[in-house]
Image (cartoon, rainbow, N blue to C red; front, side, top):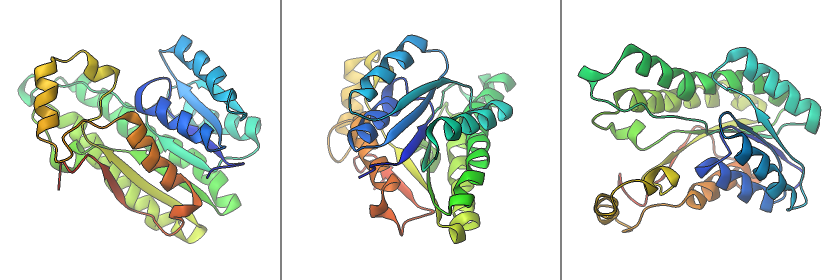
Length: 246
């Protein structure tokens, strides 16, 4: 579905980002991806992706840094010759109740989760506009749609991504550049492995499909939005949540 296309995926060394990179490579895409702290995992992923017969390269880069994001996109275009798909997946949490939340915890979330989308989309848009094509996929969350106690900063950043993405879809649509959002629900990753099983099962039971999602569930939604099969879809929020917000 993505043969001869080049995709840039931020935060791809583990979890959802890693699944997206793997599914994309299996569908013929050349993969540029970023990592920050997980250096060994990033290097290992590079080799795993190359096994699919595609070009793969990891970049140690901080997407929340404006200059670094600009340099990253320039490097990807120089190394791969093109850029067709941008996926903003990098994100963090700094959970706390509002009364206990520090200014630093608020600012860090906004920089890593929201500002990084502005940085990379702005940098990539020049290439997309020149070639009059491109698919941008920004990762939000169901929390950005419904809120969550103890996650005011995270929810605000993820809601901001939705508003940002809809605006970009309107601005760049005339150049055949699409911008969509994927909003995962409860996805079982390394982060949820450390939680109490009873708590996790309680969450599963509250979901209409009666299970947590997998990183691959999210990756398949991204594959559709990155491919030409979604050529007439832009400005949309695709919930991958098992019916959680139905």
